[in-house]
Length: 118
Image (tube, rainbow, N blue to C red):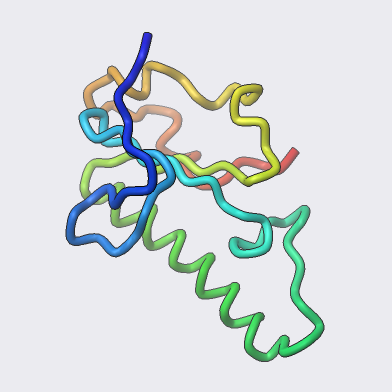
Protein backbone atom coordinates (compact mmCIF):
# COMPACT_ATOMS: atom_id res chain seq x y z
CA UNK A 1 0.00 0.00 0.00
CA UNK A 2 1.53 3.34 -1.04
CA UNK A 3 0.80 6.82 0.24
CA UNK A 4 1.42 10.14 -1.46
CA UNK A 5 3.58 12.52 0.52
CA UNK A 6 5.56 15.73 0.17
CA UNK A 7 9.06 16.39 1.49
CA UNK A 8 10.11 19.49 3.46
CA UNK A 9 6.86 21.42 3.25
CA UNK A 10 4.63 23.30 5.65
CA UNK A 11 1.75 21.09 6.79
CA UNK A 12 -0.49 24.16 7.11
CA UNK A 13 -0.01 27.04 4.66
CA UNK A 14 0.09 29.95 7.15
CA UNK A 15 2.20 27.84 9.52
CA UNK A 16 5.90 28.76 9.68
CA UNK A 17 7.06 25.23 10.46
CA UNK A 18 8.35 22.71 7.95
CA UNK A 19 7.81 18.97 8.39
CA UNK A 20 10.15 16.42 6.87
CA UNK A 21 7.28 14.40 5.37
CA UNK A 22 3.68 15.53 4.95
CA UNK A 23 0.77 13.26 4.08
CA UNK A 24 -1.86 15.94 3.35
CA UNK A 25 -4.97 13.83 2.71
CA UNK A 26 -4.36 11.90 5.93
CA UNK A 27 -3.30 15.03 7.85
CA UNK A 28 -0.08 13.43 9.11
CA UNK A 29 3.18 15.36 9.56
CA UNK A 30 6.43 13.49 10.22
CA UNK A 31 9.43 15.20 11.81
CA UNK A 32 12.93 13.71 12.08
CA UNK A 33 14.50 15.68 14.91
CA UNK A 34 18.24 16.08 15.27
CA UNK A 35 19.64 15.06 18.64
CA UNK A 36 21.53 18.31 19.20
CA UNK A 37 18.92 20.79 17.97
CA UNK A 38 15.98 19.13 19.72
CA UNK A 39 17.73 18.06 22.96
CA UNK A 40 17.63 14.27 22.71
CA UNK A 41 17.82 12.83 26.24
CA UNK A 42 20.39 10.24 25.08
CA UNK A 43 22.54 12.17 22.62
CA UNK A 44 21.77 15.85 23.10
CA UNK A 45 24.65 17.96 24.36
CA UNK A 46 25.11 21.53 25.49
CA UNK A 47 28.20 23.26 24.14
CA UNK A 48 30.65 24.44 26.79
CA UNK A 49 31.39 27.55 24.75
CA UNK A 50 28.73 30.25 24.84
CA UNK A 51 26.37 28.09 26.92
CA UNK A 52 24.45 31.19 28.07
CA UNK A 53 23.24 31.42 24.45
CA UNK A 54 22.79 27.71 23.71
CA UNK A 55 20.85 26.59 26.79
CA UNK A 56 17.90 28.97 26.17
CA UNK A 57 18.14 28.41 22.39
CA UNK A 58 17.79 24.64 22.71
CA UNK A 59 14.99 25.07 25.27
CA UNK A 60 13.13 27.32 22.80
CA UNK A 61 13.52 24.65 20.09
CA UNK A 62 11.94 22.02 22.35
CA UNK A 63 9.17 24.42 23.35
CA UNK A 64 8.51 25.25 19.70
CA UNK A 65 8.28 21.51 18.92
CA UNK A 66 5.56 21.14 21.56
CA UNK A 67 3.75 24.19 20.19
CA UNK A 68 3.98 22.79 16.67
CA UNK A 69 2.54 19.45 17.79
CA UNK A 70 -0.30 21.22 19.60
CA UNK A 71 -1.11 23.54 16.69
CA UNK A 72 -1.23 20.59 14.30
CA UNK A 73 -3.41 18.60 16.71
CA UNK A 74 -5.77 21.58 17.05
CA UNK A 75 -6.07 21.60 13.25
CA UNK A 76 -6.87 17.87 13.20
CA UNK A 77 -3.38 16.68 12.22
CA UNK A 78 -1.24 13.92 13.66
CA UNK A 79 2.37 14.85 14.42
CA UNK A 80 4.85 11.97 14.43
CA UNK A 81 8.39 12.56 15.65
CA UNK A 82 11.50 10.42 15.34
CA UNK A 83 14.99 11.06 16.63
CA UNK A 84 17.65 11.14 13.93
CA UNK A 85 19.35 8.09 15.45
CA UNK A 86 16.22 5.91 15.45
CA UNK A 87 15.52 3.24 12.90
CA UNK A 88 12.07 4.34 11.71
CA UNK A 89 11.52 1.15 9.75
CA UNK A 90 12.28 -1.04 12.74
CA UNK A 91 9.99 0.84 15.11
CA UNK A 92 6.59 -0.57 15.83
CA UNK A 93 5.01 2.89 16.05
CA UNK A 94 4.24 3.50 12.39
CA UNK A 95 0.96 2.02 11.29
CA UNK A 96 -0.84 2.31 7.95
CA UNK A 97 -4.05 2.65 9.96
CA UNK A 98 -3.03 6.19 10.89
CA UNK A 99 -3.46 7.12 7.27
CA UNK A 100 -6.82 5.50 6.64
CA UNK A 101 -8.80 5.95 9.87
CA UNK A 102 -10.15 9.29 8.65
CA UNK A 103 -8.95 11.30 11.60
CA UNK A 104 -9.38 8.72 14.37
CA UNK A 105 -6.11 8.78 16.26
CA UNK A 106 -7.10 6.56 19.22
CA UNK A 107 -4.23 5.34 21.38
CA UNK A 108 -1.47 7.01 19.37
CA UNK A 109 -2.71 10.53 19.99
CA UNK A 110 -1.17 10.50 23.48
CA UNK A 111 2.17 9.41 21.99
CA UNK A 112 2.58 12.22 19.45
CA UNK A 113 5.86 13.29 21.06
CA UNK A 114 9.06 11.24 20.94
CA UNK A 115 8.93 7.81 22.43
CA UNK A 116 11.79 6.65 24.64
CA UNK A 117 15.06 6.76 22.76
CA UNK A 118 16.48 3.38 22.04
